[in-house]
Amino acid sequence: MTTETGTLTPDTLIPDAATLAGIHSRLGHLEDQSEQVEGRLDGMEGRLDGIDGRLDGIDIRLDGMDVRLGAVEGRLDGVEGRLGQVEVVLGRLEARFEATLPYLASKADIAELRTDGERLRADMERQLRLMTWTLAGVILAGFTLLAALLRLWG
Image 1 (cartoon, rainbow, N blue to C red):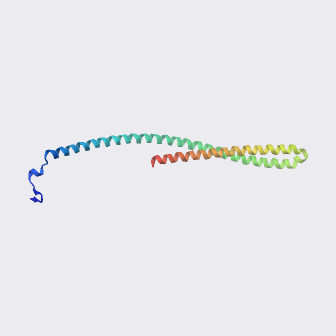
Image 2 (image 1 turned 120 degrees about the vertical axis):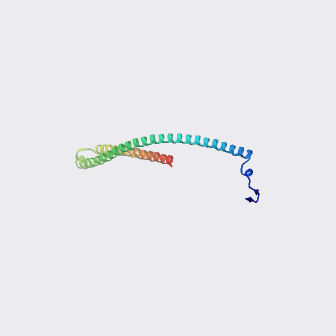
Image 3 (image 1 turned 60 degrees about the horizontal axis):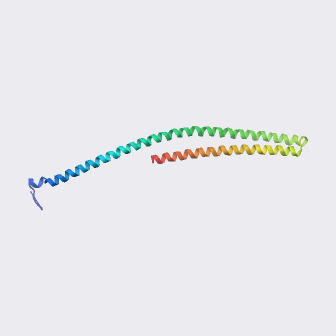
């Protein structure tokens, strides 16, 4: 059998010592690279275990936030209900005062009652706003934590 470069003989099929040494050197280099890759993979697995642990901690904190958020929502519902009840009572009192006070109280007394009623209403509105902003803050913190979680998994 012949080719353009010459005849194939047993001598041309067996590589010389320099070629074998080059192949052996390349194999050694590939083995070294394989060990480096394995080391990197081990490091990555360790980091993934750490991330898993942190995610477990985030899950626990999110569960705690859900419980606290539910408690805040329950308290806010209670305050809103009580505020509605107070408004009804104030309406009745105002009607009663308007019916009886012109005969019993002076203008200064009426002004004082109105001031007290306005102060009470302002205090309740301030408390309601505070609880509303607290709830909004808790919700925002929950969404921020959820976004951080999604970035970790993303």
